[in-house]
Amino acid sequence: MSDLYAHRESDEYLLKPEHFAEKKNRPKRWDCLRPIIYTSLAFVGFIEILFFGIFFAQVTRKTPERLLGELNGLVGDFPARRVIFRSDPLAASDHKTEESRNATMNNWLSYMPRGNGFIAVNQTERYTLPPPIKQLGQDTYSIAVFHQLHCLYAIMSVYDDLAAAKSAADLNAHHSRDDTHSNEHPHEQVHVHSHDHVDHCFQYLRQSLLCCGDTALEGQDPRTDNPGTDGTGAVHICKDFDGILAWADSRRLVDAKH
Image (tube, rainbow, N blue to C red; front, side, top):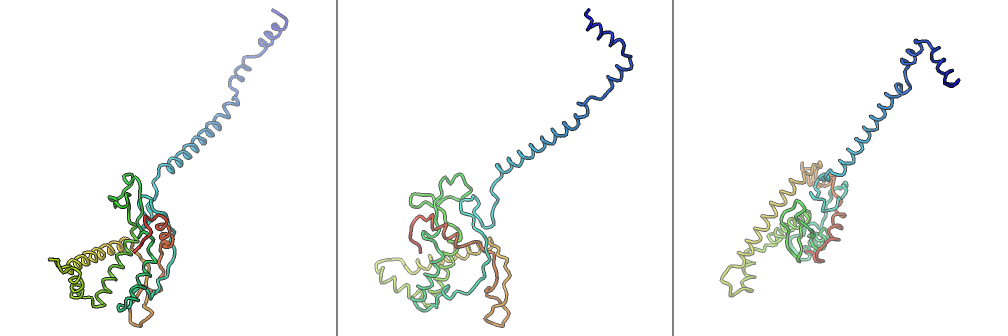
């Protein structure tokens, strides 16, 4: 054995047994760092799980249903705004002259987009929708607010007819001149159609009002001291109707409106 190894061997034999026991029981650096490392790994794992959970929730969550919005997200999202209800002298005619009725009709038409609020929807089976309206070779739907406006105007138009004393006799005389060979009574058909249409409008607008549930508080009618309200002056939280009008107009099927 070389002198080097002999020296090392002699050194080991010179160490006392207590030295080996002390060396065996001495804490290693790894033992001190182990809790810190484990804690760090657990924290990183928790952050990763949290991150992927948030990411998955954002990817899979459905679009929240908006108040008075379209269920499937097919119609644009329009901001709410505060609107003070004011009197509009052109909203109703004088119930006497055709000139006034025409002015009122034009006033109402200013709230209607070209195409009367009908839009085309592709792949309708993908959405929660009623059966489409088939027109111009496309699947189309009516935007509710414009249907509501149409119904309200129809009611007012019939009221104008009544106020102008356009009685059943007048209608009968008019149609009998045009349909002298008819065995039916055209005026009865006209009135049956008018009643059906107006009855539909009453029911539809009642449903629309119940759906909207406008809870704005309305105060005293400024035109009288008698207790009562006409709705003017109240602040309502409304959708941006100009935005809805422009959106519907840009997606119109035809240019005409009525």
